[in-house]
Image 1 (cartoon, rainbow, N blue to C red):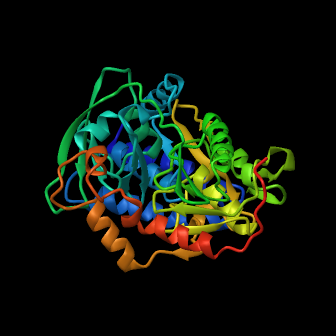
Image 2: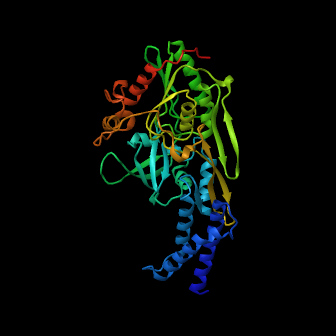
Image 3: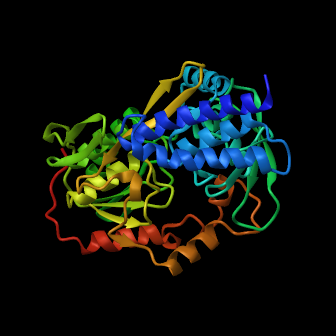
Amino acid sequence: MTTRVKFSIISCSVLLTAVLVIGGVMGQEPAAEGAYRPLQVYSDVLRHIKSNYVENPDMSKVTLGALQGLVEYLDPLSSYLTADQFRQVTSARENSDLGTGLSTGLVVHKRTGHTTVLAVLPGSSAEGVGVWPGDLVEAIDGLSTRVMPPAYLHALLSGKPGTNVKVLLRSLRNSDEPKEYLLVREQVKLPSVSRKILEPGIGYIDLDVVDRDRVAEVAVAVRALHAKGARKIILDLRSNSVGQVQAGIPLANLFLSSGAIVSLKGRQHSEEKFEADVDSTVTDIPLALISDRTTAGSAELVAAALLDNDRAQLVGERTYGLAAFQKTIKLKDGAALILSVAKYHRPDGEALQDGGVTPSHPLSSAELRRYYELRYPADMDLSPSLQLSQPGVNSVDQDPYIQKALEVLKESTTPVKKAA
């Protein structure tokens, strides 16, 4: 077979796949005129690459890169997986009780080519070696994450307990070169809900994970704090990015007796509406939520539901914006598409994934700068748990998020009602 014929076959295969994807995205048949205009440009680009690139290109890699870029451009959760990648992703999902990728303790997400650590689970291997939220994952076992499909990235972090994985990380706290860490995959215990009285009449609940067990723990915590005299509550959702998005629905319902919680809708997905059930509510005492830039998924669903229903004030930073429903589409060659087919919409109608949740009481840039300089010093070489145990670093007085939440609650004039 001649090189020209081989190139024509490859080009046709790429174009056909692109027609199917673009046609679906645009809501048109594959032969629709609107879909073919960008494909003509794509065909011209392929032709010039083949004819004029400085070296003879590997067209299979060009094709793979084109397909992955085409899908990842849609949103940060969609992926195109080769047959081998899809097998690894399927195996990781089937063999993970904790959640894909979480056995290292890293909660990561990829956006615009950059893979960011959103949270580090306490007691994990990642926490022990000094990985911090905000660090960038540049490679996993020698493979660059820049062009890696999001689903495959999480699969590479997964594995049998006791096995190792090498992760190349760049810290945003200093200008040093990336550093490679050897992480041990293990059974990481998800943190339980913690609670305490901050000041007379004001309780505090810290929630790192949203799932069925933690929702029940929050209900217990609310009743316990009320029994100790709490008549107002702060719910801290910072670095909360673990859990299925819909797990946030029963959590929001603990504090919301009526109204819309969230809706799920897409072009080919019938709209689903989730309303509050008064029988599931445990309290309607004044409430302040705390969020930061790593609050994602189920946690930001809770923040949006309570904020939009005027049930709570939100203090801190805008949330990450990560809430969509995916569908896995198997292809004939064993490859697969993981596509977002519906988005979660907050009660005000906005899609959570498009902009996150903006707090009603944001922290100023000066407050945030002082806080992060104290909490994440550039020359610090301690694990998060050790650094946060240093005198003053994790105190209420030094935490502008909590201080702002206290101010908001003290100004609240909402009538006090008993916890259910």
